[in-house]
Each structure stands twice: as C-alpha cells, then as structure tokens.
Length: 313
Image 1 (cartoon, one colour):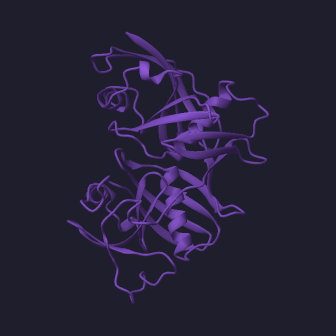
Image 2: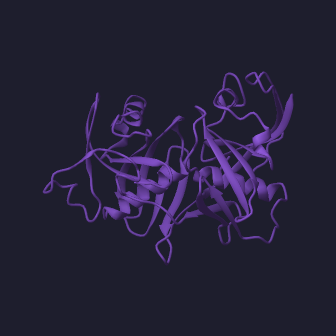
Image 3: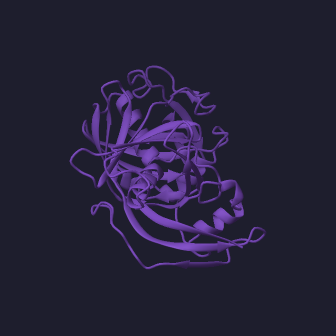
C-alpha cells in the first residue's frame, strides 16, 4: 500500500487536489484511481488532480488530470492552485515573485499580483485559433453574416441535437468552443454542455464557454469543462473567452470576467501575451491510501482549512 499527502484548493469554486511527488511514475495514477479519488461519493471530490514535481528546464513540472481520469491538456486554475501550494509549503522562497512551470509540454508563468499577494496571475505564450490545432472539423460561417465579419476571428457552424450555433474556437493546449449569447439565463448548460463537448467535429472533445458581453470591459461566462462537467470557474476557459471576445472586437485589452464562482481579470501584456488573474484558497489537506491493484478504498483527511486569498473562500 502506498500513502501520499494531498492539499485541496479552489479558485472561484473550481477545485483541485495537489500532490507533490518527485517520482510520480512510482504511484498508481490510472484513470480508475483518479476518477475514484476525484469522485464526491468515493473519494475526496474535486474537478482536477495535479501532480507537481521538480523540472530540469523549469522551476516545476505539472501533470494534470480531469475528473474522468483524462489528461487536462491545460489547467490555469490548477497552476494557480499549485503556485499557492508551493508558497504555503515553503517550496519557493517568500521573495520569489514568479514561478515557471511546464504543463503538457507548454510553458506557463505564474506570478503574484503586485500589491495583492492573495491573487495569482497566470500567463501563457502559446495559443491558436487554427482549426487543425484546436482541433475541429466545423465548416466556416458564410461571409456576410454578422459574426462571420467580426474582425479577424472566423466563426463556424455547429449543429447539435438541441440547436444550431455560430461558434468560435481556440486552443491553449486544450480545445475550447466559445459561443456568444445575449442572455446566459436562457442557456441550458447541462443539456448543451455534453452535446457540444462530445460533438463528432471535435475529435478530442472540447471545453465549452457561453459568453455574454456586458460592455467592452466586462463579460459573463458559463463553463462546461471537458471530462468534468459544469464548473463555477475555469482559468483556461475564462482566458479563452477573453481571447475570442478580444479578437472579435467585442472587448479591449483588459476585461473583468463575471463567473458563477467569482471574478477574474484578463488582459494582454505589452508584447501581447495573455494573462488571467484571480484568487485561490486552500480548503484542507490530508492523506490517502490506495492499493496498486485496487481503486481508492480508504481516505483520511485533516480538518484544517487555510485561506490563501480571502476573496476565494
């Protein structure tokens, strides 16, 4: 039997279990164990599982999984949670302002917001609107329609059992399908989310964001995460919503995102690199025991709760 310590965090309601494991290949992380561990009924319960370990080329490497046991591809809220974990546990110096990670082969930079150590900014350098990179096989919307002519951003026709939509797409290392709506209260997220996530035109499935433009500095977003379901927030989803809205000309270079679980700030840096900033909170920590050949069968957790960012809890 192997034992390991975990810490549970959330960023605006999007939860993650964080493990520090310098040799994760020695631990039985398979889809069955992960799904069981992240289940509310059988395990600790969380949206994602993140394993952090030292890296030769970066400060740390992150390996991440969704609730169904699939790889995250990208998880910016997870990076935020890992950064808070490293700070809380003394694995980075108190004076260190930035932490460089590699996640699924992508570089991610986390930094503590100036003047607000309770918030963490996460920035990426790689993203793409190209259909082959997302990937998807949707047909473009005909030119001359309102959305087809929105700046440089292409829109595509999407047909699912519950309706037809004009959508945009982007990848940050994981695929995102972004749909604009005049009123998010009319969106049946639990019906449309799984239909779009599993649409055959997204061969790797997709995350889904429904976006309502309030004005050129504020948007509202609903999230359906690939391999997870409806979530209160999503770092990569929020940043994808911003990137699409910005490219379409709906918003400027900085925006406040209103989420079911709170608020994020997104923007473009001096050289065009996108960042997303928000709070993070440590909920509790504990230890778990699993057998290599069996699913999670016993869990013990502490009752200690530590706030890292009082706005998050």
